Image (cartoon, rainbow, N blue to C red; front, side, top):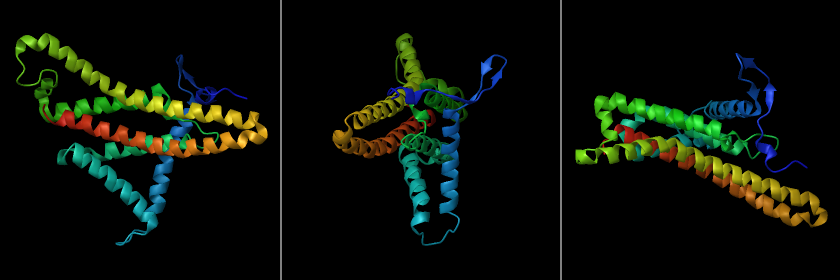
Length: 240
């Protein structure tokens, strides 16, 4: 049997090297592509017949849209609605990636620091660009809020800089840790199902309960990632 950590190995599906750089299409890349396409296909199918009084299929994407819309409105304000499409896309991509990893033979790309870290750094750069566009040079007040005496600048500026740069770290580590730990537990308990044979029905029931819990965690972590992204965007748009 494979070990519990082997499920996180990156495997090259289409090997490709360009000038010494490995840009191969991997199992992680495949699952990212599947996640993105899944969202597009589901929304397209559910919204192909739009009516004034929505049915069950139409209600699903509309409810998701309204939920994330309210998150942006409540945590960023009306100014943040112009960036709603970014938050909406990021949220659905993370949620789908979390849920996709629960299917047999799939790969959880949200359990890798590189994948989630890249998204978080991109979100940080996006927030910085939004802040500079809105405040111009006033964005520098992020590092030295108004009302603080200038003699404290050597202390405050490094603290605010570290605070800004730690945002993608906090987003990444929280999501990666939760996804990794949950999948490791599932794999370990699944090993007991095989080794205990007839008595394996007990760990099987326990594993089933963990899978249900992991579905909840997958959605919850996507929600946390989304709401923190909204808060960080709000920080970029508004002064201290």
